[in-house]
Figure 1 (cartoon, helix red, strand yellow):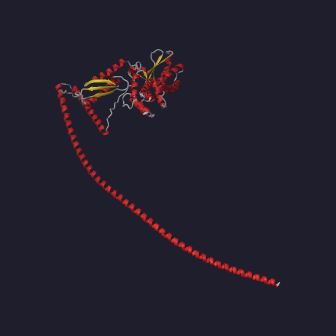
Figure 2: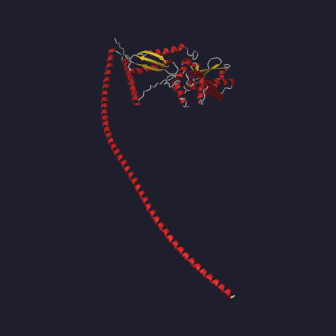
Figure 3: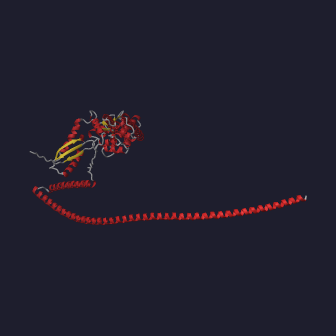
Length: 521
């Protein structure tokens, strides 16, 4: 038992000693590890310091290099700006020098203008004095003329007035010529002569045929119903339609008179409906006229659409088709204008096909060439210009517009299509039976035009050209001067307007020329 205790005690002592030894060994190892870790940490810190120092030096070098680079760029930019400023200063100096020269030049010009103005004023004063002397000379001559001719004061006064009128006309012509020459010099283009005249669009001998419609009545009692009590029915009808109603002694008929063929046709339709219905009073008249207007719109549109369908023309604006339909109720020398337009379109298409041109475009030009006649009664100007302006509003092709405004020679032709339209228009109007003006009347009208021009003093010969649309007058150059020629053109045009009746307008061209002829022997 004692041995067991001793062994146990020895084991305990041995365990304690072993634990102590192991604890001491562990402490020693820990101290060694701590020392090694401390050494390693110091080494890492030292290396970090060295690397940080290296990085700091590198950063300083890079910053210095960047600074030097920016400094160089800045210095170069400053140098460039300085060069630009030097150049600008140089240019400003040159401009200042040039401005000084120009100022001196302008001052010299201003002095020159002042001198010229003074010279002009002096010249005007001299001219005024000469005019006064001339007026005195003319007055003395008139007095001497009165004494020599033994004229009464009234006759002398008339002679003097004639002289003054002629002098005033010559001065006016001189003034007009100076204005035209100045306009040509300033605008650098030819001046256009402006002709103001009232244009009659229907020949007088066809006025009855183209401005009236006859409505047949079932009996003469219907005339009283159309007139109404105290004329209220006829007044209401004329107000609603814009057409004059003529009730005369013609048995069982009344006449509708008006220059607008569409309104006249509306009035005819409305009156026939009123006669058939039998109820004629102001309220009923307004209802029937309004209904007839709506029916006319349908008729006009259908007429235009039918013309386009017959010719195979598509893409026209509805307003253009409406204007084509109105041509169905318009006549020129008795020829239906829409039928004439369709005939011209067919001829243009055939000729274009033979010439290997665009046949549909040629038909389009031919159909629309007289479109202005549908609205020329409402607008001033020739039907060619009115039609061209109307088509420009609808962005029509340039070939079509040029064909419209040039087929009577008003403007130059561009391309082949206006030539085709002019030729087809002449063929359609000149074929037998196309127009109601007989050949004798046509020739008589041209002869009358030439005789009228020949009757003026100083006219050597007059020729009617362009189918009577132009009169060309050749004057004697030793009898009339340039100013008198201008006056003669206006006098001839005014007399044509007073004494002749013609469709459209007539251009008066007066030619004065000098010819020299010699023979070499």
